[in-house]
Image (cartoon, rainbow, N blue to C red; front, side, top):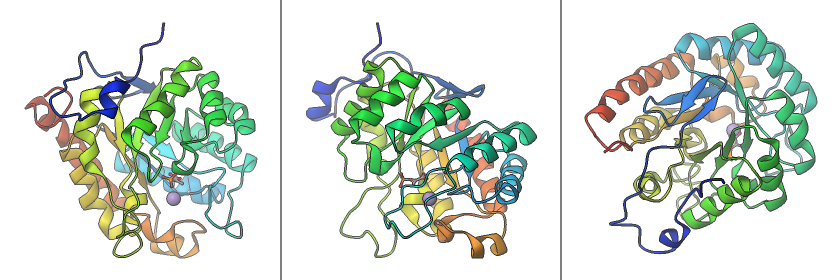
Length: 291
Ligand code: PEP
Ligand code: MN
C-alpha cells in the first residue's frame, strides 16, 4: 500500500510543534537521488527552442556541475499569442541532447492526453504551477509511473499542494518531488515576478517526507535575483534547485520565453558549488531534514 504523503489533518492545523516521523522519501531520477541529503541542481532553458540552443545550454549545464537538465517542450504561456513550445519536436531534441550529454531531463506535460507521450521520453514529468489543480492531469501522471516534479500553484495553500501530490500517489505513483516557485502577492510584478516562499520549507518538513526543490527563476523574473534566492533556498534546507539558464547574452537576446531570468553558466557554476557545500551544513544539522 502506498504511503500517504502527508498528515493532511496537520496541514489544516497549525504546523508548529509537529514533527514528521521517519526519513525523507528519496526519489531517483535518471540515477540521481533527490532528497538523499545532497542538494540536486536541475538546470536548463525555459523552453526548448532548437537543437543547437538546447545542446549548447546542456553542455554548459553539465560543465557547471548540474545533475539534470530542464527544458519546456509544451509551454504553459499566459498569452495564447506567445511562443507555445515546439511540442513533439522538442521531445525529440531533448532525447538527442540526453544521448549526447548523458543528462537526464525533466519537461512539462500540461494536458492529460500528452502525459503518455511525454512520459515515454522524459526522465521526470513536470506539472507546472498553472496545472497543479488539474485533477485529471494529476491522475494521469500518477498512472504514468515516472517521477513527477509537482510545482506549487502560485496561490496554493500547503494543504492544496499536498492533496495534489496525494492524487498522484493514489493513482499509483509515489515518486513525487515538490517544487516551490514563488507565490503571488501584492508585490508581484513590482520588484520581482513573485515572492519566493521559503517560509514553507520548515512546515513541509514536519508534515511530509517528500523532497522539496526550489525554483528561484520563476520567483525572481530577473537573472540578478536568482543567485541570492538560490543560496537562501539551500540555506533554508531545500533538497535542490530548478534553475533557468541561458548560454550567452546573445542567446538571451533571441530567447522566446522568459529571457530576463535565465542565468549565465558562470553564475550556475557558483550556485552548484554553493549547493555542494550546503551538504556540510546538513551534516551539522542546520535546517535540513536531518535536523
Ligand atoms: C517552468 O518551470 O517551465 C514553468 C513554466 O514554471 P511555472 O509552472 O512554475 O510557472
Ligand atoms: Mn520559464
